[in-house]
Image 1: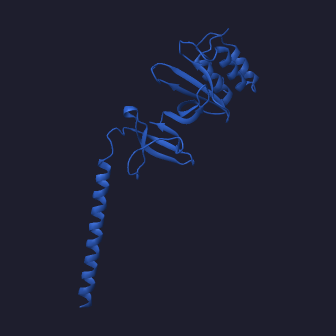
Image 2: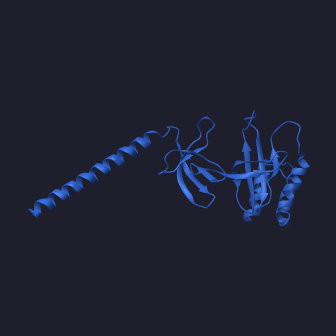
Image 3: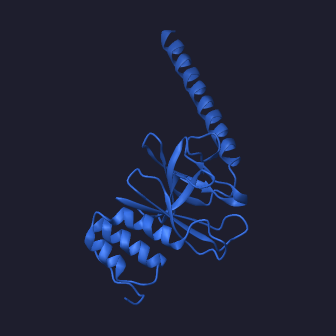
Length: 209
């Protein structure tokens, strides 16, 4: 009699566990089906707390959403939560403050990362081909150092060069390297900063003075 009761209790327990598992799987499946098909980019995000999380991205229709496994649904990336993200192991973006006539904060593409950082903002507003480069040394403010906009400029070319020189002046060899070239190009800016950050001097495709 006791054996039958034990058998019945065991069977009942197994049925309860089986039903609970099936319902959980069904719920998870229903949840996953709600995810948009546009989560077609993979990469990772870095939170403001410093945690790195693998995720998928949705950049369709102007969105900037990310989804980490276990989240109920994709969420919009915001600077107060996500400090940086990387897409497809190639392009990284960091949330930064840009000071100018109007102060704004947004995600900019990282071009160089080190003692001096270079960030790129491009394709905004009505100018899909416009490219702006900003540089910052350490925790210093971002300075616009180059753009390709053919319009009245709020900042002169000389002022941009002066800002960049102020960042590299602690390394005279780098200053001399920068001064050897006449054309103030994106390539010169990048390789100058690369030289400052790494100590490795790269040759340019442009002609020297």
